[in-house]
Structures are given as C-alpha cells and as structure tokens.
Figure (cartoon, rainbow, N blue to C red):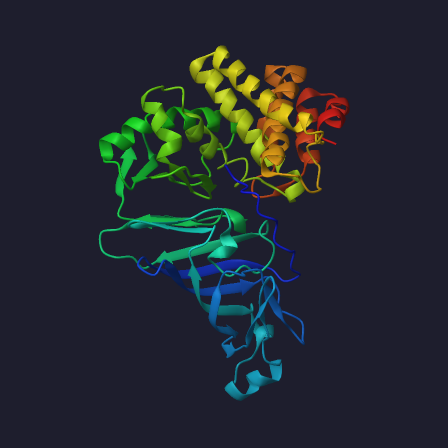
Length: 410
C-alpha cells in the first residue's frame, strides 16, 4: 500500500551503496538490537561529519574505518564525527584512500511506526530509517544483506539478494510462522502467524494467477527468485522488496467473496512498480501507487470480468471526488503539501489510476500494454519521473501524448 503520510526525510549529501545488517529482536523488551556495516558511496571530505536520518535509534558505538567516532544526537537523527585521517597512522591503517570507507554502528531500535512487535512476531513497515541507520535519503538505492538471530523454530523473510533497492523498501519479518510454498508456483511462499498451511493456501490460492498476469503485463519476470506474503493479525498492507506484509483484516474477506483479492494483486504489483522501478522524488509518488492501483483493477477485469473493472473505476472516481469537493484537485506531479493523507491518496492513488485508464482508452489496447512493457523494461533498477512514462507510451503509440499528459499529470 505504501505511503503512510510520514514526511520525507531530509536529503543528505553523503550516501551509502551497501548495508550489512546483523539484527536480533528482543520480544519482551520490544527492541531490535543491531550491528550495521555500511559502505559509503564516497569517502567523506575532511573535516567530515556523517548525518544519519535515524531519530528513533539509540546509537551505542560508531566507527569509521575502524576508528571510534563520536555520535551526537540531532533534531533529525545522529551526527557521526570521524577522527582526522592522521589518526590512522598510529594504527598503520592506510585510511579510506586505499578502498571504500566503512561506517560501523552498534545500535538499538525500539518499537515504532516502522518496527512493529506482536505476539511471537516482528516486522518492518515502510519507515526503514526507524530500525536501521540510513545514510542518505530514503529514495536512495543500495544493496543489503540482512542476517537475523532468532529463537529456535522461528521463520523469517528479508530484503536482499541481487540488485539495489530504495532504502524505504528494505525490511524483514520474523516470528513463529507457518511456512509453506504455493503448489502451483514454488516461487510463491506464504508465512502465517495464525494460519496453518491449508488456510494459507486457501486464502492465497489465486496468487499464482496474479503473478502470471503481472509478469505478462510487465514484460519482466518476478524481480526476486521467491516472493513471500506474510499474513499477520490486524490490517497491514505493506510492500517491501521481495515480500509483503498483509493483515488478516485485509485478506480474510476473500473466503466469503473470492473477488476480494485486491490486496494480493496490489502488493504483488509493487514488486515491479514501486520497488523495481521507483519514483525519483516523492512528488512523483503516483508512479508507484497510481500504476499499482490501476494494475489491481486490470487484474480484476482479467480474472472477474469487465463489471469488476468498472466497479473499481467507480470507486476510484468516488475517492477522487473527495479531493475535488475539498477544492484540492492537483496535477499528479504536485510536489507541495497535502491537507490530509486521504486527499493525498485521492490524487496519487485514485486519480493516478484513473489517468492510466484514460491513457489506455486514448491509446488502445495494443499500444497501451506495449508502452507499459517498454516503460518497465527500460527502467529496471531506476528512479523514474512522469516524463519516462510519457516517452515509453509515445514510442509505443507512435505519436505525441502531450495533451493527455498535460491535462492529468503536469
């Protein structure tokens, strides 16, 4: 589902391209103990400070290239002050010029909006910098290796593997879970805190069909070798790279009505549009959510017929109308403040999805889906702007689409 209405973190000049995280959840204390080794994208200039946009963390120790470095809390996080480079001579350390600069941090992260503890489970939720030290803005891409120290018998899923992903999409889930694979497609894994294998397979039984549909429309195979859906109590609906956390409140209605499958399609679609391809700025967030909401409606049309698609469009139009009624209809690339999370979603989610429908109508089926595949293939692993979607769609259509993009997007 994505954005929770939190303000974006301030941009930082320094960034990191690789994170090695060793994590240990303490369930009774509702605290995550962590050790992070972070490879900086470039050595900090001297005199140097490193700003970490991690206000929720308690930093116990920081070192830069093996040298203890004071850590000072700031209003937005922490500031690390590495010792002068000359200090390395006493230890025969050749210093950062001989290779990458590494920041090491020992820390503790209490439960917060981005770190949720439940009975016998813990999971992350959107705000990555609430549970790990972040060097750079939350849209910056980096690779990650996460190692979890867990009690015996617990199961987990983590972001990681090949490819760099935006910091805000990194995460993990761990707990005393039932663990099973989809009999129709072993790339689909299900973890459940309160469901046995039969229940998990019953609730997620259409996931293999959703995956086949999305792979076809994206023109790009599933970005991760295995995609995990974690079913927990409550109302979560949150994508992360390689997995999603889904609340039973969101999924259990599917047992009474098989067409209540939106959360499966929505969170899975984010593996392409939102994670593999991500908006370059939060002002372009509709490229994550608007496309994903549209793809959910398109899945319903494919699986349940045109009436289901039209019902989704009507619901989206009703939600967009709330922004109009509030006098706050804005272009999709609006980068200013929104008066509420509901109004923001009315524009970036609902209006964004309705624009994709309008574009489909304008272009026709073959050109539209060809353009979406081109957009997806051309932008794997990149931060994108609306102009990138426009270029792909115009190439597929063989003509300018300036008019419709100007009307809706700009």
